[in-house]
Image (cartoon, rainbow, N blue to C red; front, top):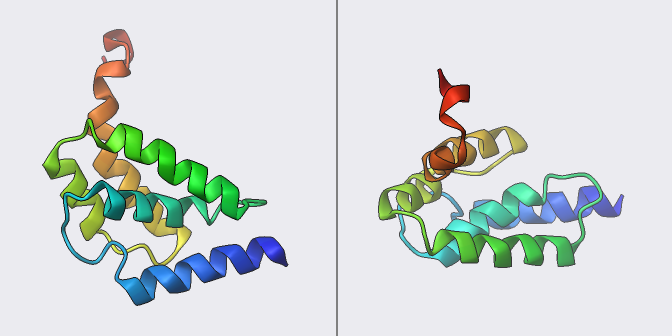
Length: 103
């Protein structure tokens, strides 16, 4: 029940605070969306979510404003919405994919 409660609370908070509803270049806003998505994971704790947000902020600082805006404009209302967030961030990591795998 605790797992469900944490995910439910995060989903409600993201809806109430407008998480993912406006374009922003703020890493705080970007990582709030990421934390909401992390909250949909089974057996997640509040500490895990905070750790996810902290690591997100380290990565987010390297991302383009375009990526940040893409992530924050996507509303996160369910776990399915997190796929959009991943698609926004994908281009930031394309250079890490070996070129022979892309062909």
